Length: 279
Image (tube, rainbow, N blue to C red):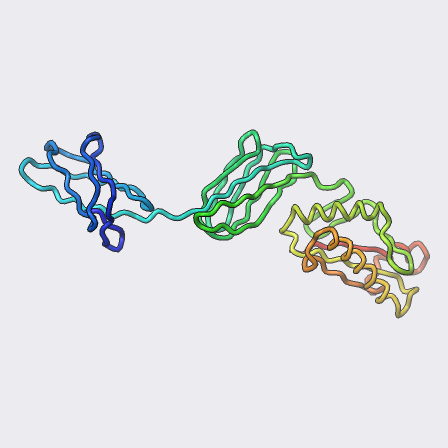
């Protein structure tokens, strides 16, 4: 008898005797089977069925007697398939190690063409791609049973205009707004493009907090000035494709000076823009 874990018979399962290729039958609708004319002695009986893990059991065949064999099959876990390619910023294939975490943990490698594929249990996943000499790249996705999911990963170096730590992003050429309507010079836009690329590559940066600071010379208008400056940076980043809920724009007025506001140089130092990482 071939049955599932609940005791229900499995119809049309294939029953064979290992080492005896011609001794094979299909189970009946109730899961029962019979194999006749087996030579006496030990026999390994294997049962396979669609959507179940195959199973083997040992029995002993005695001449003139019927050997009763009951085999319980375990349902095969339904999986989905994820496949894709790892490339660099120029589109060239990159050999990488891929680490999946989520409903199932798996580590695998691409081939030398950057291609990979894996069968995984359904559920939410994070995949991290690692390659020598390049920053890691991660992506999140949901996998459905019996589906195919394409996840391509671009591994590109961090812009040389940026210095990135666990808590902040520092621009090589700090943004220094003048009084009036905030305007982003082309050089600053290029730096912010590097921030856009970084946030695309780093979904673990949940929120980027843009803080604009000023000096006391603007008096009561300092808050209005810094609100507009932080908003200008957020507006640029969102227009480049970063989700608005990942950017928090905050005008800090003149409340957090780096140095005392006692000289023009010190006041200029306090007029600044900071980019803070919130995970």
